[in-house]
Length: 439
Image (cartoon, rainbow, N blue to C red; front, top):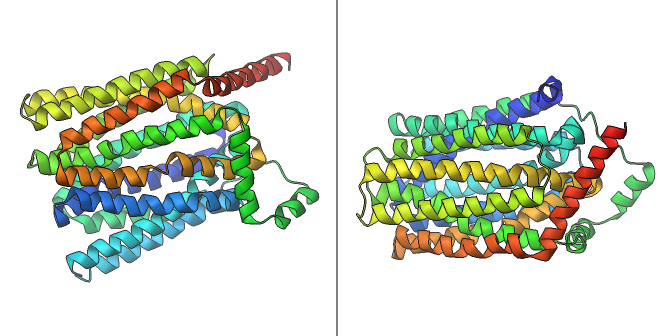
């Protein structure tokens, strides 16, 4: 880890990503409660997330193709600048005192633009990381980047909830815009130290290809890599199960179902506990020497699914008055911390292994295609979750999500093609280890 943070380009990337994600987290938590306050409708919030996330999913395949053609570092800072500008425009518009309907429409527009930018930022970040730190430091870099997710929630969620609760949405938007501007500025100075330059012949072949051909190649690559398509499909269902309960169910539970006076802050504190657990687990897993991604992933998924089911059960019990809020809240925070730890135990080694075994020239388009496929059901899950909250209740949403979660959990464990892919990653790591020892 010490060697990693002696890399100035990684420090710039890490710091820039940290600042922008804190700002984004600030806005995200405030936005959930802002839409609920404007509409008092779980369906309205679900519809917003459906449109915003749907735009990102639709653009992701094309974004990955273009990221492989463009300078990845440039894509990173340009997309941050774009998001900074659109949030300044949003702030100016809201300050002009539009109607509630006009505000909601403007949030839809900004959500679409911001998510399209994120569709380019994500694969550019993933593809540029090994070029910045080298493959030997990749697991440590992924572990360190998990700090970003943790700190953004610790700082961003608490600050976002507090600023929205005490001051208002305008200050939240302003801080988000500033964070993207600062992030983009720092990322302008990143150098891709380990970047593999393409030959003139490779560049000519790339120019002659259409974007459609590049996208088709990424699909063929995923299909031909044994187990990769199955893994992506199970990831799709996993995301479908998790997303609506966390993004819709929890804010709705605190704000509407339980009608807590201090809903924003109570929700924020639970997210902080989640983030602290993720931070500790991310640092621990990033420094671990994992001998078998296959076995680690199996254990992590079982632990993750069990913790998720417990949290859903607690939501059912408190929503129906079987336990007091204080009993629920303490148990809920513990459950969220267990979920965070198990997520890190599965995500960090799997992401590291995937980056290593996918050919560098395909990384951008393959990861964006994987992201588009695995996240493709998330917008639909938001819409379904919104309908469930609107016409049924949060308890039914929890039951629905847990039942859906059973399928990918056992699929990851029992599917022989997925097992073969994970074992091939383990073999790749073993071969690299022997090579390093020989050197």
